[in-house]
Picture 1 (cartoon, rainbow, N blue to C red):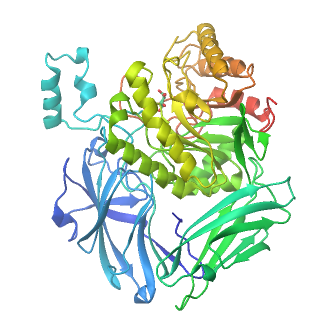
Picture 2: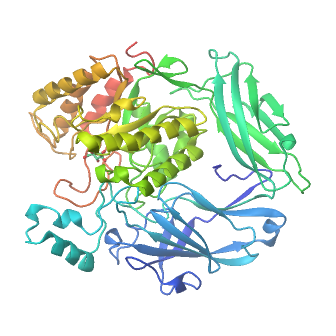
Length: 614
Ligand code: GCB
């Protein structure tokens, strides 16, 4: 799916701004709020999560539906002989969309874009756009939640004699989201909303693939594949120009929707040394006033898992970085370019070269920045919090498959994306039939990734601290990705014991023979807590924890990377283990370094992107 762009043939009208907003019911919303102005609305900025934007209402505790509304003014000239599309970069987690009172459709899933062709529905002048959004998470959504406050009343120490009666009471009196994941359930129109206009015959999609490379400055072959939409356009009308970073056209092809193009002296896209080309695809006038155009940036680079190495452009890459979150004060998970630019500058400052989009695909503008800045991304679906009964759920499997297809369709051309993560920490190490069901669930998803990614990038499932001997899934992935908390949740506060247990496990993975990387390890740290012997939660403990664990990684040449948890502190649900959220950041939530950040900066600046263990 192409990101909307304005060019000689296309126009994007941003629908960002301050919308009208109301909370609705837990299970539905008044239909009259979709075809007439909202009564007594509150202002709500888009993009932005609604949760932290209003203090008169406790929007953090809201459960269920909300309604957003605005008018869309459309100049008549824009609609002449053109196609109009309404696009949502995301609506978290489920949305019903209405234009002038007519329902355009619904979308499930809060982290990927969706759009509606509104060519025949949009009027010149004023249009009323209403979007109803549901923030509920349950066993059929990704991410996964527990409806009915199971977490409150599901345990023996809840303090009431009947768990079932407690759940029922909670549903009736204090319904609330109980996420099975450790980040605040920020919801609403978290990303941009656009109306975009194309010619009636249009370029629907473009895939660019690096087929072969030589060295820097040597010839490279790229493949392109253009999908056409509308009536009247023919492959003969397609023209592709490859434009380099200076604006010079370096290669061209015409007359076919797919083919190979040789770039005579190609600059490679490398981590830390990005180089971007643009494929300018045009569709000649197909009997209309204008033909279409789309400018798709791409990088020339290859990715391969070979033996126990992860190769970028044929060279062994070492991942240095973290898992992140889209999370900040006031915005919640709302997309924020200032924050993205700041975070990218901090990634450079830290000497890191990569991150995982834990635990959902991020807004597209972050991938654009990473393409440009040479930062490597492991792109993750929102499948977080799954456990064994779900591995036999066919409807969930279908939804998960669709999310994978949509994520890869959206992000396939980004050179920064080097691996796909199918899920974070599904719980599947119970052994026997339970482990086997998990294997039956995840194997086809791994194969699906390989099938639908035109660039054939590797696939992984990021696994949680578990009985690794009973975990049948992790070892079948292209790269073994481990989240481990020896010294924090396990063997708390004892780093000698933590290193011992870590090494026992590493001996196991050595036998398995795959490339292994750590995708989480860390320690909650409240800035300003100190101690001569650095106990848990102190800045000294976090620093020492990374120094000790990283030293173990350095002893094994098949450990291909370290992505700690987390880049910065982030907001979570309230709970006895969370002090204003999760504090495992090496930066505070307002992006100030803790002591460990300085240690890691020194370490990472000394580790090269390529050949660290070769
Ligand atoms: C994990 C999860 C992550 C949590 C982290 C923690 O394993 O993947 O979402 O935030 O642990 O700090 O507990």
